[in-house]
Image (tube, rainbow, N blue to C red; front, side, top):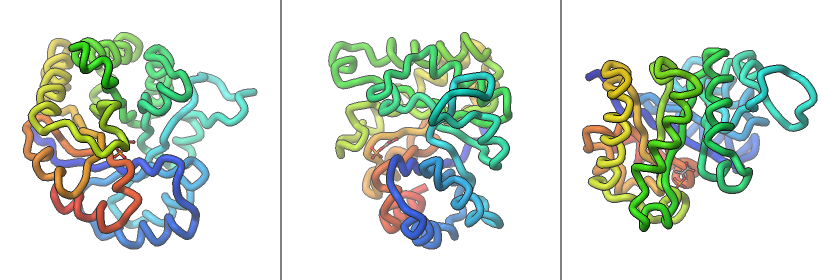
Length: 246
Ligand code: PEP
């Protein structure tokens, strides 16, 4: 097994040219594999500031459409590739919740990224009601299987999965390391039913109120390969502390 710890920062709809620059200056000495997902307007500027570092840039979203055209407000996978972007977050629960993104749409987005050689960061996770109803495995299996059915298992050879329980995102509540590990193990075993090698090499990140004081215990779990960090990625000292826990 050659997986290390990978950390991705989801800046969501936060930042400005000035704020981004000072944040990047504070974190750009970090030596672990790190991905920064700024709002799309700032991707080019962030990427330019990361030249010469090992940090990579991600988009927070991508269009599902296969062809360019009259899709106001959308950014295609081809454009992201043109801009030197190597990753894109898809299926984030905020997109599913606020913009009505379905499993089928997320799978189409994955397909577009695959076509242009970008690595998807595929978010899956259950709501609180689904957890309380005992549906955690059912939900994450449905979400990931939609991707496999659309894109094929080999697409996961160039993909990252992020398990993000919806009830833990931005709430200050975190899954216990043991609870998160159980879901990560379930996801890896699901992928292994198709291809053991892909499963073994697949990075599965945890997301949901990761902070300096819970990062190390999450990263100690055998199937937790890092974190997708929202709120804490906007505060340099908090983010650095998470990275140092890796
Ligand atoms: C996220 O938005 O992906 C996330 C995990 O947010 P937070 O860390 O703020 O819970």
